[in-house]
Length: 601
Image 1 (spheres, rainbow, N blue to C red):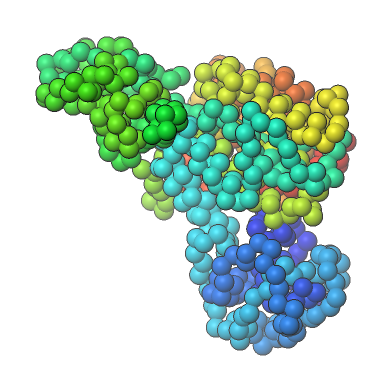
Image 2: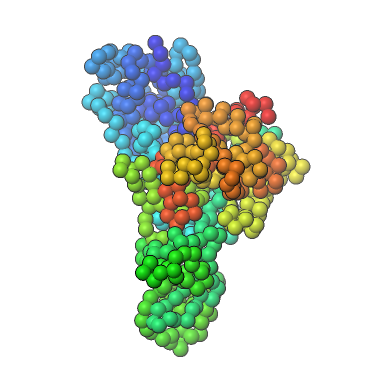
């Protein structure tokens, strides 16, 4: 008989084992010492589909560390329940005292129980289809991709700025059990290992899981991405003189923003503001106009001839219009506000409402514009996702979700692991800031963890020498209208797999060993990979990869999720990309060490 569950490693799920093992353990096992063995003579996916559907109909995700009921034991035969019209099943469930997951070529998987469920197994034979939902339990790969696409769209719609993205991802980590730490205080991590995250200035984040038995020789698995995106920032003094009744807003482009793709878009305003609280202390508050389009940059109609033809002057011809007509003059009290005269009184009133404070309590603002149109699925059969800020919040989102996924194996399976996600700011303008990749937040955290373990600083380069870093940034998907701009056989496609970036001139860091390691990991988990190389007659973009390689001395592999219309105010990608990122980064965290050892780096 062939085993019901083939010995294939799958993407990590919140149960401490692969999805198939988890489903069967959760459905059919009722004791802390129960072990399930399944065999089958019928088609594998038929059995699995019914069992997954049964699980959906009975339960949500089992609560982590929920204790089993020692009084409940289960042993039965699924011979009649798991049959097809054409063939009889020989599926059997047995109980034994085994407590560890073991694979045997003739015996199959022995699945240890983690969480008990009380389920009426007689309902299995009534389940003929896989009817899942997006509740964190994923029935099949396509539904998993649907789930992560939906989650990413919610994320990008509600987090228009870097401040918002870091705050939300930090909160997500906290809810998953990660302990927040202040960089300006002692790290004080548990000697038994644990999960933590640190933010810097609200614009960079480093999250990590470190095992009890980890040593510098074990190395570190890092996924690094940049969390900033192209935007237009309000100038310190954004007030501009009205023009014939039009209220204007002074902004400056961040990197390549304020290009022609920003014309005629509905723009909101969001960011961080410093306010004086009732106790006299100054604190930061995040604000966003949401779906309210507060301004727009109008193009000149083509009827005006040559002047309507781009490019436009970014200082004088791409100025956002806030409104038209007279504004109620500032009151004597408003004239005393710290920001009076630096920003229009109408804007200050609006921002103070968003911040839920008085105008006089606004100390400073760091605001930017964003496209208010929400993300959506697109294409005739919804093959795509259309969204703003894909570069590079898509990789940032997937990296954090993948790190959370690895918690299923912590601490037992990760006791010698040190897994890190680094989200850096300012990649689009060179990374040379304390919140950028050159700010060495990763180096700082690793050094402090090593010192917390009572090890000397000389172990820092030792740890990095044994490490592997993925520099994760979006890459260019093949645009079918511009085939000639892509190198043949090196053009990534949407919904296909993570892309390995290669460049002969060092703009990215992928080397021969890195390629082999990633291919080994992909093979272990049944994942697909693609390759990208720029044409010789085209310029190449950069990533944070070279900076991380220089600062740490670690091997760096540049990877990316494929997207179209990079640096547009609204771009697109395959709907599977967020899920591809999660599953591939999770596979990397799970198997990088094994793959490295196979290569003999």
